[in-house]
Length: 227
Length: 227
DNA sequence: GAACACAAGATTGTATACGATAATGTGCCG
DNA sequence: CGGCACATTATCGTATACAATCTTGTGTTC
Image (cartoon, rainbow over all chains, first blue to last red; front, side):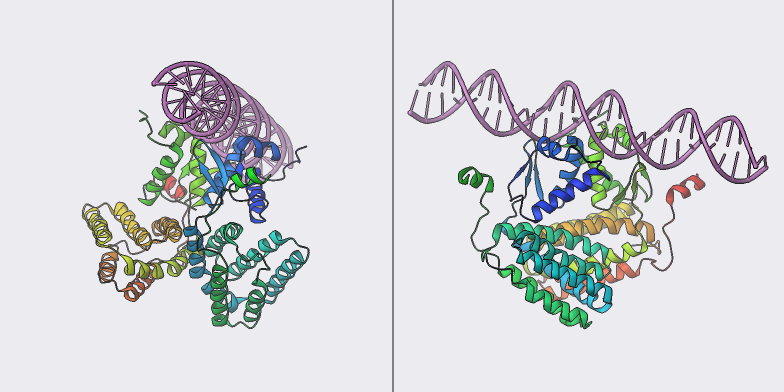
């Protein structure tokens, strides 16, 4: 039943869970029992705990003492703060990326966009959102700023969670235009334009969230009631 | 020998180790054996591992598979990146802080500065550096930006490590002037000035490091040679 | 009938034990 | 005498077992 588990397992498990959260297969509030997770992945609680601790540090899960691990439910305040942090980091990073981007990088970014496009066409909105986040992370990597890229990776993951909770217009993510425009600026090595586009893109994202009143409903309760 | 250990222990241990790194009692490259640390704090390896994992996530220690945990030795590149990240985050945060700072906040900051002063006078350079970092973190907290404050906390801790490795002028930290000037700008609610002062303060810090050539010497080797 | 106290169950927190892996020391061979 | 192969040792990686804590169900009392 348990595959040979190629590498160090706790990292793999943490990434699997993170991906599930990212793709909204694990809704906010879900309980992640150590026994249960351990059985699913065929490992002991020890390694599960390590994975959960890592996710807790990234604020993707919340660890409550003697209660267990739950998929985090970002507060209104946290949602605002995450996007404010991104607004500080990403525009300047996009500018750096535009100044040093290569043809290979551009091709890679284009593949990301195409994959996102395809996922959306197939109705896999969760996966599309995940790939959309990858696009942002990739830009930070292109800027050759590993430290900042790491922060952005965290922020993108948390953004995914925030979108799961506070998204209002259930329609299409209007990101395609923004990402295409960013691509053009990057291809043209136009740093200032890329910076400006990224800035407004993040503002658009933030304003598309309903941060007025919608308190995060405890989805565990909703589960119990709905089904 | 072992105190009742008031709270959850792994957090406490992680903070104790972080403080020791911060104050340069644990030089970069030091090995942190699980058994050894566990014996010192009177706990099992389980909880030590949790603490070390947390520190590894903050990039204060490096975890090598089947080798153990070592106090991190930031690379030249990492040193540069950490200060670039701070340059993106802290100036704008200082501006926000200036706009919303209260009298109580000012008093607290002043106490920080005084304590730093006192530590320096008593020759406790390590503790002075630690308090100096606290000053920066406190500003982020005053800006009411928990998320960014968390990032800055990480970056300040890593900066301390970087200073331990790359500091060139062994003389006094020239921070006192910069921090006093910042205090004045904050007290005057002068956001733009605070932003500018923070920016140049960080640049000063970066330029006071010797990032030209000095490769981090493996201090374990140096220990062995020096006695 | 409602509220409190208590007990049973479940889940996490921690310690210990065993297996795997890498560093080190020893002996043989060239 | 130097270098390589192998055994030894120490340390980490993981699993399991026990203890502490919280939740929940039940019975009693007002």
